Length: 472
Image (tube, rainbow, N blue to C red):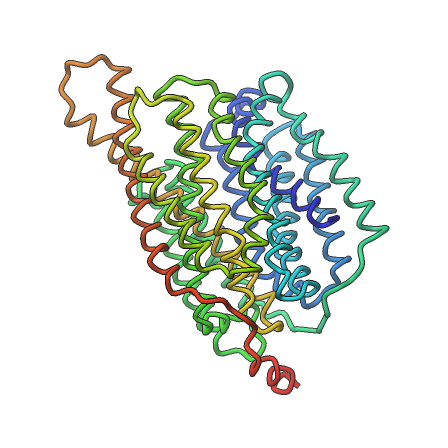
């Protein structure tokens, strides 16, 4: 419960800032391209840090690592709250991200170390409440605060909770994971940083509209990222003590589940980002009203997460994934055909159904993936899934924003000049949304096809018996 509260605060903070960016830009006098670094920088640090969490979890105690992560997060929150200008605000966000990047893999690993396999669905379902509810209430809460108070309240409000979690953890948290003494391979660390960092930065630059796909700001970091990632993969597979053990991909259920989760992340990010843009720019709703559309879906996800966890323990993950992905595919298809006359309530209901689909498969698919691995690979499996979710989020956002922008441009070029400018812009945005949601629908159909091949997993016994001997 201590760790869940820590993760809740950290993930809530991740989504609080999006609504407040325009206020921050006005207050400290920065341009949109500078302000986006507060989001991109945050994602970048998490994308770079998560691959080394497997090493850190093996090397340090649960208590020490959790207190360090919460300490970094709390310090970052304080720095961001008092920051007089952009530089210190960015440093605050980077420190927060360093803490957040450690917390979720650590929590997942603790669950797999403590909870027997037949109860893991319920335990992961409880964690799911936090992971799904926090991002959903973030924009709404942020909208209310920013409308009535300074953006600094977003950080000052989080600070006492973070301090309470640290104090509680200091007094009550016990060590549950076994520590070994792995060596850190500096070349692997460098390649991992360049690889994941380059890809996340390159795609984030494209996603935030800073030059097209042909601009050097997108191409150079992406190329460096892809080459470094190739070298990183080769090095991990040839080392006796890899930084990130990619042998986890030898397990069929693990790699299929990871692919499904990456596609789900792309689809989820598309809805969370495209819908508020559509509601504000095409239908003229306020930021708060746009945030409120996401709220019922988030609440439902929070309610459903422990229920789907218990269903997973009873029936396994396959049919939860099939039904969840079917619901997602249907909803994304409906989103592709919304018009200017679609009501606010209809959009809210569709988003709620989308989130229901996601809640049915997010935690069950992840638990099913990790259940197949021998315990020695749990930290590595957790790190792989968490890293690839971050990468999928950045890649998916970039891809869908690009598709939306290009389709809107094409619509404007081909449109006749009879309509007034504002209507034309709204119709162009709808054309862009249609293309983006159809692409998301196509991706989810691929994941749906993959979900039929999922089986109920259990740890590989042979691996369990031989692993310590070979390591010895």
